[in-house]
Length: 360
Image: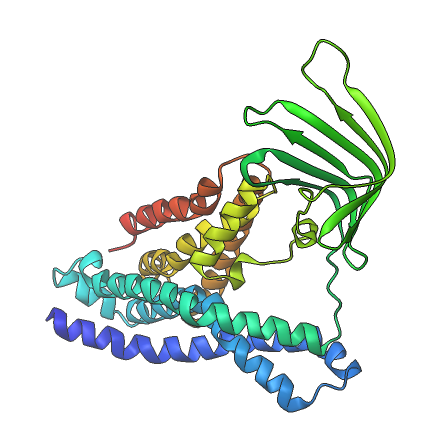
């Protein structure tokens, strides 16, 4: 009997899922096109090119709307069964709501695992290409200038700080360099009005150098109009404002980049939270499947409207909560791991409670 019920559920569920997926993807595509429409028109971007950009955006759209689609389709399907008294007949036959929902929950878990692999091997690359094409074709200039930048070199024995970095001229304004020994003791301090990148080394102008720290006498001050040291050769790209997005990196690349940010003493919590969210977000499909199985037996009238409203409402609440916890992790209120997984944990518990008290 369960095999028959499972076939019936998926026979009714899959068409609703496909139509809903197409509907939600089209909404995201239209929003993206209208958001960039005036830029495309101003830069005379051909319609065929806009269509290609839209195609590259399709995998990311699917990744975004997959949880909403599952939530809607499962809620709508089970709600129809309840409205037609089919669900009541099934439950009265001795089959529990959990047993009936088990194939759907397994499907939700399978979709979660599949979406993780889909993101890793398809979405990341196509989304990167889409963003690059949009940036190039709309004439958007990328600004790598940076302010109040601090760099910690490998081993932590040298610290660079600059009030401002000008990427086009490869110049540092009011740079400060601190050299330390292996035990972290200061051995040299270099201050300058500015520094420019020439012949693969930094040339400092109007320089003040303090040496002789740790002794009984005060540090010795030396002043130069110009100063350079072959050891002061930190790549100018290190000082750039980092515009890389974890969403456009593979897991291996993201992990390596975050590790380099941590070693350089640069802000990394936001990126680390995004990295952990790659795992928690993949399981969103399973969470919404659990919630939708509990909600499906609560709607008997206006099934389409109530399913659409509940799926959109819960999805918005979930994503807003994820954004808030990510911000909390960025500012150090919670750890990046907690910021990425707190929403999943709370909504999982909420799904269990809804399932426990669902009408049976």
